[in-house]
Image (cartoon, rainbow over the protein chains, first blue to last red):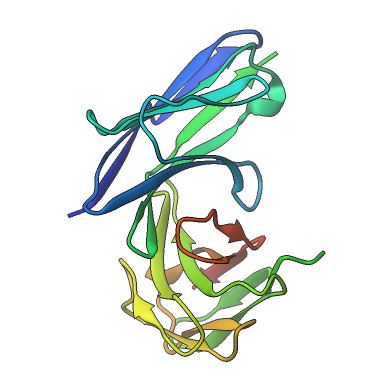
Length: 109
Length: 112
């Protein structure tokens, strides 16, 4: 059975902290791994990772994939209150995306 | 640029009632999806349509039916709503495999 496990389930940090969110997976026919940010409504796309060891970066956010160990991390540096959200990891299997339960991040000012 | 449009945004049903959630995309995408989101459980796939004319079951299809009316529209029907179907429903689409999903703004459904 396909599994995508995110950790931690939730965390609270202070503005300026750096956080690392984890996503491990057991999925047959892996194609890619995606990260989404969800605030009040629809998830918004952050990154798509297909190759091991190549870091994707966008401002203070970065992500990397390890296909040998079957996991990915999402780093957020110098966190801001606007980073408070649910962060979702999804793995592409065939024509379907399998999502993890998400990590709820709260950034306190 | 509308993207993925879902209607209604909110709905309250009584147990046993039926309803259809509508979804339309204007991006000429081939694949469309219906997910439900419950607290602590992430997004779970209900049904998807890889291309116009095809539909397939996802992880949690029981109690639902879908119709891919044309390339733009993909509807989700609850024939006899149950309290366990209280959830937030998201429609999504993408152009082809291995591309990111674009999400609608969601439908908050409560079944009493």
